[in-house]
Length: 371
Image 1: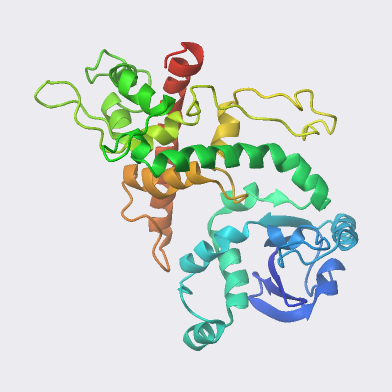
Image 2: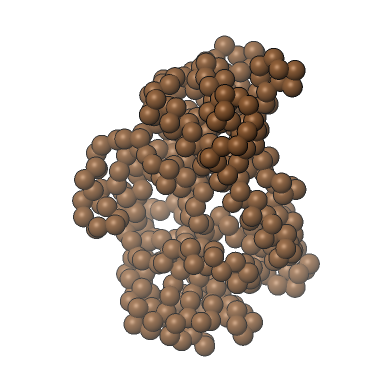
């Protein structure tokens, strides 16, 4: 299998054959639609940023949407008939792959970038994505397969997620600008901050699974690790709890369960069930979601698709790096394989800590009804 990576811009397509290390710049867009790509054969894979394979509609806001629906259908059927796999890569992740490949493009024009590295940013993008996917075969496996979809249908199918994230953003942003209810300069309180204040000792008791004494439990992590991840710690003098060191972590995790008014944070459902292709039996209804939905859409822990909201930013930009034993928030330019592997290992570890904590809160809030 040969991996080809493509980028679209200014009515042309840039193609990179990663096996032969050949870059084909500024080919006509129709070459991509017709799969007129030198060296392409049955079983090969083409990876392209997802925004470029969304339907271009009249009056649409995104210039990244390069093709109309008929062209997208033609590409899909051409790939099917040739036995070629077309997969989607999130354009939001491309700058990260660029850094990993050794290109620092921050605050650089294309001219400045080309002067420093000898190639255009377009070439750097397709080379970087290919290098990343060859380094991380797991990431390649998780990419979505291309399937043309009307923009209207796409929006309708995703509207329940957009609504869920928008509601969450509004709730958390309102609290964040007022210290999450813990800043004495603001007279702000809501059901989440009240839960933290009222239940903090019960939270610690359940996290440690032994009435506040650090001991063995059924989890992969000690109670002390779980508490520390949320900014909680017992006073070493045996006088209760220390001041919470990170209200934002606690607030963000608990806000995946509760809204500021004390009601459960519920999700809606799409018109069509993706698994069956039939009308969704819960469309028009709302209910508290499972971990799989919250993981993907609240914390945005998912494989290269759709950016998250404020909760995801709080977790990925602050809590995850703060708990991880990997130094720094981001990977360095031209990161080594060893460093990258350790970064991923630590990221997975923190995600498992989050899931462990989330299950405990689910029992407290959803099952036991604590507030």
